[in-house]
Structures are given as structure tokens and as C-alpha cells.
Image (cartoon, rainbow, N blue to C red; front, top):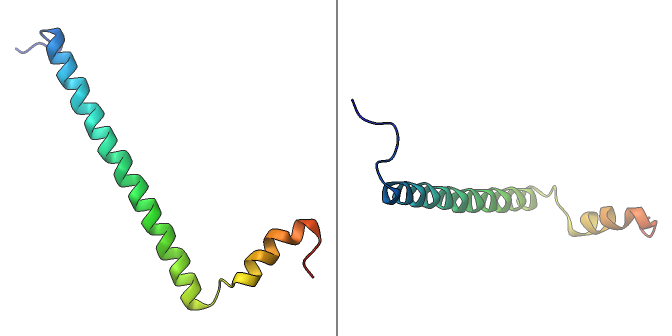
Length: 68
């Protein structure tokens, strides 16, 4: 039967480094995926004509009352 705990401190360090490396890779993948998703969404919105520059500016300034 194998032990469920690390046999030495170096085993713990190696395991922690592997977990941290995997976490960083997952984090970078998530950031890249979300960026790509946002760019595709904005791009398709522009191609479809549902996003117009003046509309966006108008919506942003509507709170100040300067947009008619």
C-alpha cells in the first residue's frame, strides 16, 4: 500500500510547482479565450451593423444629457 502523503519535502515542492505551472497555463488560456471571444463578438456585431460608433458614444454620454 502506498502512502498518501509526500515522503520528503522535495516531493511537496515538486508537486506544488507542477500544480502552479498547470494553473498558470490555465489562466493564460482563459485570458486568451476571453479576449478572442470578445473580439469575435465585437467583429460580428460590426459586420451585422448592430454596433455603430455614434450609438455607442451616444449611450455613453446619455447619462450627462448631452445626447439627443
